[in-house]
Image (cartoon, rainbow, N blue to C red; front, side):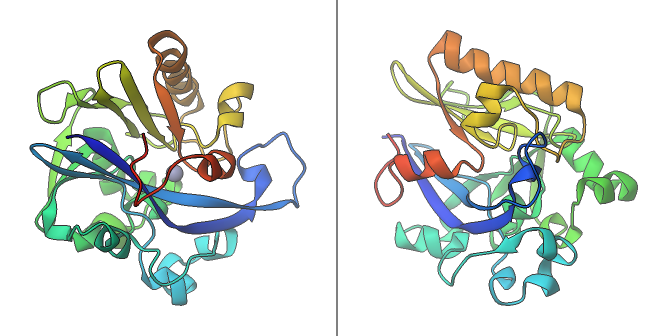
Length: 256
Ligand SMILES: [Zn+2]
């Protein structure tokens, strides 16, 4: 039976104005870094791999200048491999890893899944392989540039061909950001938005964060996600929403 598990892969603390550019600078806040395990009858799927474990004890060594902007408030055991272990799942048990995008808090643990197939949007990989684009997006080759099996997808992609897990392009935050629609059961659909929408407040106020590669694209993606919620009845799970994180059922309980 298909289940979805929300795993907490630590926390990051930074200035709230990064999420809401119209608010005053100087207010610190702390947000969760989620990854999701989806158990599908044809194989396990991991959505995002969190921050690399080195960043827990050596944040500057791993994250460089970003460590000053995003203070890592994670502890031992928060990293994705430990989170999976708690659910009785080993990295080799993961058939597909989906990277919503290549930021350090979504692709940091990629190297620990050498036997999985990674599903990444073609234009995200093209951006990552272009030094200028990669630098502007804050991509770090340490996160993604490993001998891994990357399968590039272009736009919408049905992971198992049965309509249950569908990748949707939600570009804009980065060149090839993607979100995941999950049909958990008949009449129950959810969407893991990733950073196409950080929080419910970004959605409600239609406000983009400071981190946006292409604002026009990101507004279109936000509108598409809103339509899935309002017209298709999908439940949205936002990228880094501390309020929603407190309310939802987290692993080891299934999300829905
Ligand atoms: Zn991001």
